Length: 439
Ligand code: EPU
Image (cartoon, rainbow, N blue to C red; front, side, top):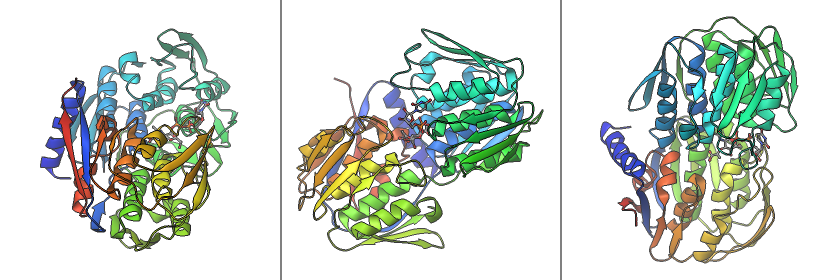
């Protein structure tokens, strides 16, 4: 990433922290072509940064995306006593004395902040994390994280501003997850790294980001085997050391561009993307008629006709990820035929559907199902982005719409994409992002 783009992103992020936001303006531009570089995975780098708290010294993380959430994690680590510095694509974290308290104000901004729970408890035997909602974890449940850590000997008390965990010394045990939660698997794995004895996590999440975290922890000196499978074994060690690590590519960002080429047609290369991390979603879009294949430099993708409707259900990895769903629904909205889409992970993750309907999509939702009746073409309109993926999906959907679309409140998009407008423009799309003053 260029220094210029890094500076532009910082300006946009500074504007966001000033409570203003941005909007995307999208005009039709025809088929896409060219290469887009896929950056490091948001959902990996944030956990890798949390893991650095387990070893004193200087950690260097490469292939770091220039996104808002990395800035939040830097501030969180700094609030605990770490020093952080960033240059394009790199974050350096110096861990010295750490106060294992993650303030509410920062955790509130980003759910991934809860990733410090396991490492801090594992290393210091105490942790305080300001969980929004305090006693009521209803909207952001971490019950599986806490139960798993209790199996290793931790005790927790909740307060209106968060959760306080203690453990004289964690001891290995068998943690059986009721559901393969990504966050719970990561927190328990990190806590177990410095526990006495051996821990097994059964029904562990298998996402590539978990294997990436295990790979960095092993470089630090941990004894983890089986990451990426349903049973992870962690042999506790007494000490870890600071390391350098390169983040895996962001498969959700890559899927965004797959959907973009599906909507606009054309032929693109997702440079750096890993086909082996995206087999199921490539298979799914393949059923729709969008061709993909692994390439020496990433993933090649091509679409030259209207896609076909398919049914799909979100599932934990290696199934079709819930994060892909907004993009897939955007594709199905203009596919030939009717599709049934089922969400199995997050209740109510269909909020963006109303906005797609404003663009002319014919979609009905009922509980965790959506029935998508494909239309020939969407029509430009003013719509609102409610979260990172919803915003990105609306922008992608608008690429194929007739007339101009304005997607408002796109500040969220910067949480997960360094420069979505610039990347789409580099493929030939007509998209700009501009700051908007608060009303
Ligand atoms: N759940 C519980 N209790 C828990 C933990 C999870 O009930 O203790 C539930 C959740 O409410 C949800 C389901 O289990 O219904 C799955 O949650 P999971 O813990 O797997 O998700 P997460 O760790 O909170 C990560 C990603 C999400 C992604 C999910 C699923 C990060 C920072 N976030 O969340 O990514 O959707 O896994 O793959 O890693 C995004 O990038 O936009 C995003 C939301």
